[in-house]
Image 1 (cartoon, each protein chain N blue to C red):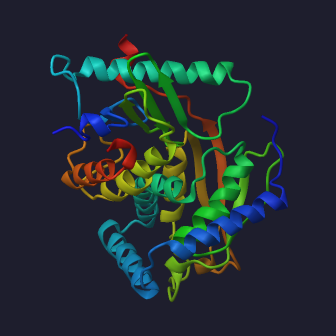
Image 2: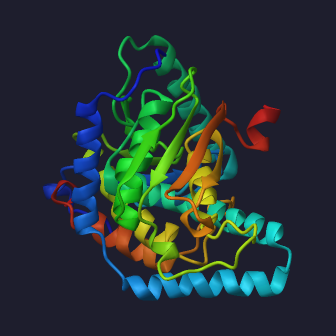
Image 3: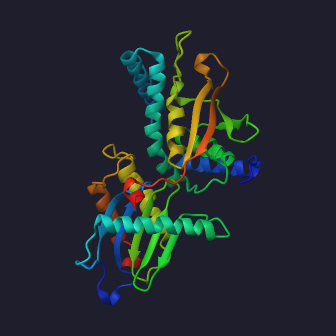
Amino acid sequence: SKQRSMSSASSNANARLGEQIWQKMPKMNAEFFTLTYGSLVVQLVKDLEDVQKVNEQLEKMGHSIGMRLVDEFLAKSGVTNCSDFAETADVIAKVAFKMFLGVAVDVTSWNAEKTACSLLLYDNPLADYVELPVNVDLYYSNILCGVIRGALEMVQLRVEAYFVRDTLRGDDVNEIRLELKERIKDEMAEEYRRE
Amino acid sequence: QPLAPPALARTMIYNMYIFNRLGHCLYYREWHMNPQRPNDEEKQRLVYGSLYSLNELVQKMASVKPKDGMLTIKTNVFTMHQFHTASGMRFVLNTDNNAGDLRQNMYHIYAMIWVECVVKSPLWSPASTKPVDSPLFDRQLQTYLEGLSCFR
């Protein structure tokens, strides 16, 4: 299918949808959310010691969350099919991030093939009040990358998502790079393939 | 106990299947079925396999892209309603031929009952291939279907 940029009209429609659903979502106390996540990360750092392992574990946990979250997302947003990856990215940024975290996210820096882009998060509720020691290679919010990967896997898209800029590491904005690797073909369980 | 007395019956519901995206049957429930034709794995595979093939057929033959996941198959003895989510789940409801468009109802079962009772349950995993054991889901599904005027 022809790759195109999201028209601003459709992107605005997605932003409105995101706002509408955010209004209706059950809410929890923001500080409680931040502190709970913080405790989780601290515990992982203590248990695993190696920062790379912590990054991996956060991503893995996010992946499990994403696999569940996708159905709640589809159910509440009513989004059915995205015609191309540009639309998928816009829906993630404007609808999903808005309805689950209440934050506005921009999609930028598309490559020529329209298979990779950046998600810019100006606000990150996970990282409120958090300070990292200098020169630590921890991607504190790496769980978000896993959530995106797990959710998209359930709609037949294999992607890689990783932080390239992180305000906790001194950057001015949070930037997650999102790359489409392949469209997963319909798979069937073992017992069907035999026949 | 039938869902509706024969004189007032509008639609009779026969059974329901829920498949995950790999074709594993996560849920089966029947209401008015011939007891000599019990549910078994072979029948489940037949249902899933047929729907999978039909979906391929629709994708290859249709001149317009379908905008939602609803597929209705009417035979001379029953109607099969399939709601296919973007995440690959298939909700399949078999009724007699008096049922109208069950799109909204099936969406409700997915969004309000399946997601709330099963997906959000810590006792269930999306990677699970076994039938779901959730009394909460059973109850809410039963209550919802009994409350629908078309099934009274």
